[in-house]
Amino acid sequence: MNHTEYILIDLYGVIIEESKGYFIPYTYEHFAESEYERITKAFREEKIFSKAQIGVLSSNEFLEYLGYDEPEAAMKDYLENYLTFDAGFKGFAERIGSKCKLVLLSNDVSEWNEYLMNLHGINKCFFDKVVSGDVGLKKPDPEIFELTLSRLECRAEDCIFIDNSVNNLNAAAEFGIRPILFNRDGVTYDGTIVNNFSELEAVLTDNRRNK
Image 1: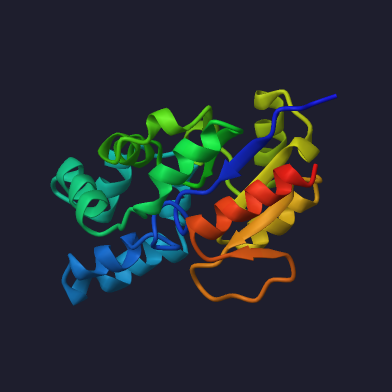
Image 2 (image 1 turned 90 degrees about the vertical axis):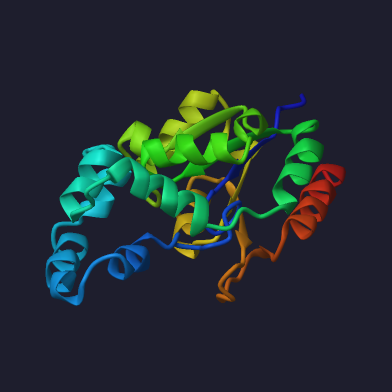
């Protein structure tokens, strides 16, 4: 029996080249040194970024808490000018999307994700999007993988997961999802590794041939 194959793919460190985004350095650059202790406490102790990434805070609430006077403008400036969209993604998505269902699985602030999807015109690339800010769960929490499989109504073995984080990949593998490391950061990994979308497409194509 043939089963639909789902390609679960991360945003930051894969489609967006910056593996952890750039927002924390961006924030330090935009405030005076006298504010650094307060900002560090917000990020490290109060986990303010994580709260925004699981939807506890909206983008505006998050940015206002950090001290941005114009949170909407700050969001747009950061997303438009400090992140790099990998130009190889669109062609990859068009070719792979004709054979498999592409699903975004990303840790992100809801409003940021929506803005980036529209900015780069890639909403149409995805069969579904599972974004931490929308679902209240973050990778590598096992529950976000359970939720994804439930939403797609598919088996773990019908999924391949592409991420730049070894921890996230290991969590997915526990469910029987096949992991592939998109190696932006030159990390060590025992499993399948790709370095760009051309290599990823070749691996996925070989995988389909060998089924």
